[in-house]
Amino acid sequence: MLNLHVKSFLMIRQKKTALLLGASGFIGNQLLRLLLDDDSFDKVIALVRKPLEISDPKLEQRITDFANEQLYREAMPAGDVIFCCIGTTMQQVRGNKTKYRQIDYDIPVQAAKWGIEKGYTQYILVSAIGADARSSNFYLRLKGEVEAAVASLPYKAVHIFQPSLLLGHRKESRPTEKMAQFFSPLFSMLTIGGFKKYRPVKGNTVANAMLKASDSDITGTHTYTYSAIQSLAL
Image 1: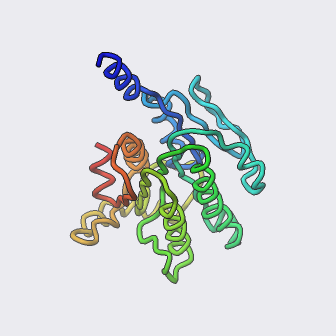
Image 2: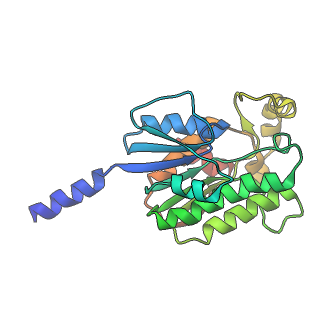
């Protein structure tokens, strides 16, 4: 009986390996720092195109070419939880929808498929409010297609986060977003009832909620909008 208790304790205390996609991005960078500070994970692997300006004993950076399927697949290690914060903008891809899809769809979905083979049990994804695979809007349709593809795979749990406007300081300049952030307090006051899910949310709040989701034992696919993100992040 004692051996069973010891075994159970060791299983509970077992540390996890996190794989992070999009570590250089707005939410990804904040999530990376949270993961490095979290005792639940003893290893954090960031798949990146170029080295990050951060070092930590727990962090392993793997440089890869995401457009090269073989190199990308070989760069993926075994692990426990995949955190996906991949995202681009039309400005970054100069209006090229094919390139946009390669980044926002191919990278997350390929990782999800290979993750099953490599033993991952949780996939935690940043999507967007209004994501719908049937939408006539290119961006929302693409996000919806990613959600559907990931949710169709046999993970123990899939957690999908659908924030609206993200608040916080970004490295790159986004004039339209800065203007939206300026008016966000007024917008938040006006969005009540069913429109509450469109309220702006801080990037670090989303990152915190994603980390909390990874500690959950619930199974199945779960989607979080504004109120659920705020509650989970507490």
